[in-house]
Amino acid sequence: MRYEPINSQLYIDNRKKFTAQMKPNALAVFNSNDIYPIGADSTMPFQQDRNILYLSGVDQEESILVLFPDCPKAKHREVLFLKETNDHIAVWEGEKLTKEKAYELSGIKTVYWLQDFERILRELMAQSETIYINTNEHYRANPDTKTREDRFNSWVRETYPAHQVAKSNPILQRSRSVKHALELEVMQKACDITEQGFRRILKYTQPDVWEYELEAEFLHEFIRQRSKGFAYTPIIASGNNANVLHYIENKDQCKAGDLILFDVGAEYANYSSDMSRTIPVNGRFTQRQKDVYNAVLRVKDEATRMLVPGADWEKYHVEVGKLMTSELLDLKLLDKADVQNENPEWPAYKKYFMHGTSHHLGLDTHDYGLLYEPLQANQVFTVEPGIYIPDEGFGIRLEDDVVIQEQGEPFNLMKNIPIEVEEIEDIMNS
Image 1 (tube, rainbow, N blue to C red):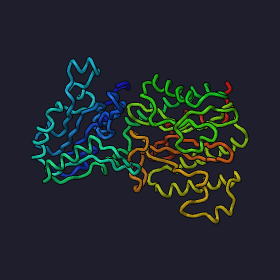
Image 2: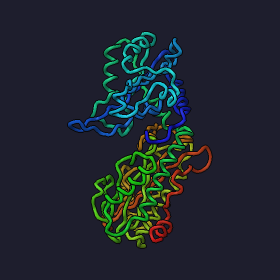
Image 3: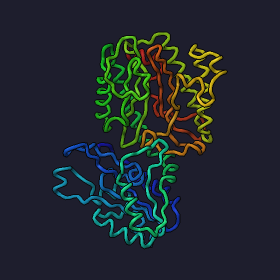
């Protein structure tokens, strides 16, 4: 792995949080992701399943984690199964985890080769009553592909039909949403790498640059900082492209007088950052662009202050809508009649700000979290209001990543990334 190893205490603590919520005499199984084929002998770069990563730190294909806190044999209460490495694999694919390295990484003492999995599992299932299976129940998930985990879940139900089945996901939704101090350190690193990329862009941008050239500059900086690259497909949208919320072609030339909306974040150690900034191609905002920009910035700052322990997710978004409505009235984009006659299911402000303000952030860019529970300290959220005006040829979104605190305002992981109009203009023209 390219990134610096993370202290194994993170994974030890994560497993303790998970197993504390398990039913008596139950075991849980977590599988690595597949390596997905493209065609011929080509494959996509490997991306580890976030749950086995969260619980073990193992960032390698063909790995399985078993947790059985009530197991009669103490050595089988935490077990890792790894693909056996050998000299041939080392020559052709590079170094794989040894049993010793896996223990150092995860804090798990019992490590077997994968070929022993079914034999050991048979023993453990005879000693247990319930098996926790891992399913993806994120509120945005709509997977069409059958994963390694899906295949295992089908197999284990057929092979052990007398066992009760429970779901790991509700436990993971709750535990993954509240970040460990070591996770926050890694996320800060991801945000710092994003900052370096953005500062590089501010110096590089000029009229007639191409969107894909800016994407390349970000990627160059991210990789040289030990990131694997983008945490998600980047949006680099100049002019009216910014009014397409998920514009990812990044194919057009940036013209003087236009704005460029960036929605870009570096990953680091599989953790995401998520930043949006909007800058002028020629280094200077027009007065109208500046007025809209500062309106978005005010909404972002006020919305951030609302993210406190105990806050309600739905009420938060209602209040942000009120802030945006006020700004749109001041900008003459809405009038009082628009607001008075609005549809409560789709308020007037949605014409110019049609997406949500915040989402959980962590191992996934849209991370796990229970939206019907009050917000908690050490949850990490984006804050990303925007105003999109196709008739005027530009859209503006501003986004930071913040950590809810026990007391006071959230801590901004992106506090060092330029965002004020004057700072952006000064850097671009220095």
